[in-house]
Length: 258
Image (tube, rainbow, N blue to C red; front, top):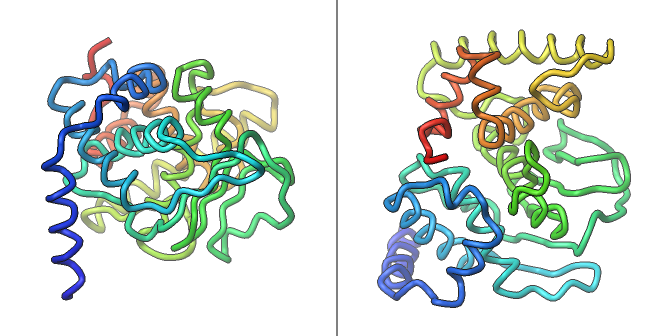
């Protein structure tokens, strides 16, 4: 209870300071979604990313030296993901670890253990329950600049963190406002997930990447990427599910400036 107020005071003091001049070109160059936002939305991204930069423990791995470009590029994408939320600072994520590129790691794909791993050995990222998020800088930059349209590593990994806000098991069912919303979400998401599994097994392509056919947790993360990266295609083919995503994320990427 008492730790809340010092944190709020620190944040208020931080946000009273001018946005660093050297950070603006980073956001402009490395985060293509930023250009599609309104002035008011951009101001919120600037505010939120400053909290992420200040409060997270940023650690370079594999010889990577952390600098402002890395922090600001990642933090800006985090802020865009939760742009519709009043305050979502991912307080459970204390550390963000960044490798220069895809990295090799031992382990298993253990959803039940609170771990979500991308790939069997060479990984682009990981999201741990109440633990760090691990990212490949090369993939962050590629998706942030729009060089790999349809995919966004930051959106994907932090979607897993949103998924785990209601428990350590990433199950593709993030916290929702009502039991009716939960039932509707589960029915639609499960049906679409099963369609994706069938299509991928038969070699057909859908708007969602086949990595989303791995399990429901990965489907939610992949669908989140699609929501922000390919909103027109998502809405065209799955309008009802798209509507649920707009309600959950409290924003509609189709309404952003083109």
